[in-house]
Image (cartoon, rainbow, N blue to C red; front, side):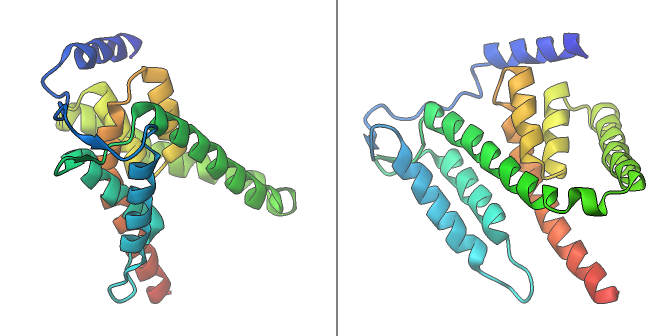
Length: 201
């Protein structure tokens, strides 16, 4: 698997056809690229707040959708709407820290009180089985590359921390494309299915 990952990393680094080339005379909103980031977040929150019946994209889904739009177009007229790579890295790592701290604090408050060993086994089974099945289908049936398969699995799990780990291990941020492609579908599916289960029960 390490050999496959190294081959895939070299392919990504040498493949210049996928690299986006933005016009050189664009007007940047600010030096550090914070304004495009903030604009995408504000628009994402607005989009995620809309509800159709009981369904909504939520803040996470709205921000992801707007980020994909910003990343696809890159500029609006002569105005650059792409945050710098440095800004994206800083906010990604900072966001992961905040996310894990929030999950840790809320989960750790009653962890010892409600923890049972069988819950750990259920967690292992529920996590590993879909990952293994998804990986085999992605590699054998869909013929995806190693990093695309792993990126799509993390997106299907809606696991941003897993994406951060994958980017760190693989040494390339291109895996985020597969993550972003599967994340909205997984997010919408989780929202709809969970609501359907609640209605049925």
